[in-house]
Image 1: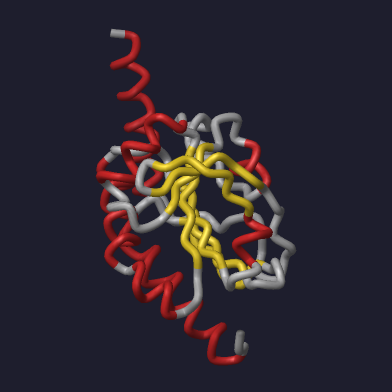
Image 2: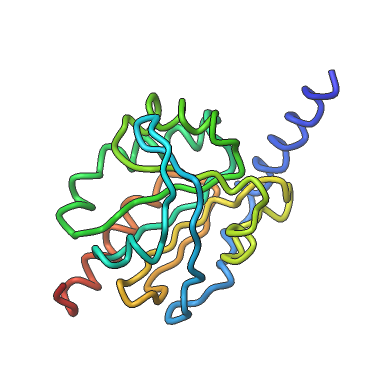
Length: 184
């Protein structure tokens, strides 16, 4: 009963957030991206994901999402999985981050992310806080915030909106704009 109450409260807070205008993430374009290493999983296989190491290969799309297996997060993960070829063509790495435990993310990475990109466990919310991606209405969850980070470690795009529909299109457009003026 108590668990149902808290789930209902969190869902209500997320729905309320969908009805309000999208807030801007605190890390502005041009800011230095905080470096981190988190336990991640891709296709169920666990590994340490290092932002610094990923940036050596090209830009990184870092997206935060509230919780694995929820409706909006499932839609967003499917969208990222469907577009992974477009990200690879732009030499970009995609990494999703939530507060979920790694065991839950192992299942999410196989079934919802379709083994196409990694998701990382930020169970103590350190990275979410560094990127100002905590959902203010329900602070135990991440806000739905996407960042595009250049190989030089600078934020080149940020977008916050609890509705999942535009995160993929917007991050791809930002990567294309960046690539037009920067050659890897």
